[in-house]
Length: 434
Image (tube, rainbow, N blue to C red; front, side, top):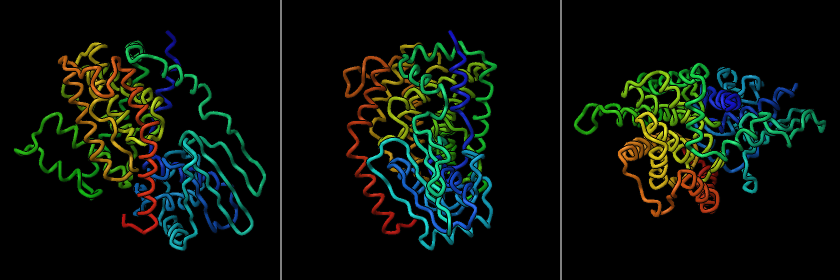
């Protein structure tokens, strides 16, 4: 078994990200264009697909008190630092914010959504008095496919994928069974997985951030304040709820700390990591077992995302990442391949249909809910309590369950997605308070 491609995929998939990935993507696209602009920036025009628009409308921006894609585009265009990739927002200064404010508040930054484009898409056009530069990112958050200045093409690679060879690896992964993915995880040299512990520490730090800084609307504070009380016992499940909610709320409120992402998104990373690492700590399993469980969660997260798509009408942080975490928790609990499959079946009968209405601090409640379901579905599965294959959209195999979940998201909820987007655009145009 050649394990090299899976190690490469893990190391490219599990990387630090600062800020909600969608506004970061817009900022990065603007930064690519801004880097080519020599004159003073006068205006910015942004067009995105629906998923980017939804997830960026209310998401906080690190080191910035404002939210939204207009601010992200203005900041990126001024920073001109695309080499920093998903961590470019760490370079924000007060001067950056002051200049960005002039652009946004003077209505010089326009953001529209193209509902005809289904894949991830961001197009930023920046103008000075004598220059016009356009950059396009497609299919992945850092995948620059087009760059032109004053009509001259500087880069055009629409037909190329971001990571050469990765598409074939992901296709191979998508055609595997969950049991085969587990066999890969068990075979990878554990020394190749040590970097995954960086993600645990990074997300633990993120979860602890709100203990000492006002964050979001107070979700984490409300839960944390009840730990150990008659209402909220200090047990494994509630500690998972608090950590996941705190990390998600901080991140989506613009916390200046990075998170370790998974399958292209930071919230997916913390949902895939924290329930698994917290369970491993309580069980007292070996470092090797913890690392393999984390690798299983990340690879399975990528597998499920390959079926449901990068930006689904459903909340993929719950649909994909919580389901992956549930399977990994079952793995930690000593579950067999059949029992791990039952955990996935139980999740398909529990969380399917949770909508995605964009990235915002309220995602903390969704992420915590998905994590609670992950723990419950894993525990019931390893105790041989599995939903019946005849139940609803559940399938006989975990692969069928995942494909049924994907079918609902891709085909069944397309109208739902347009209705969600309609509500959000209406709110945005009416100047709803963030």
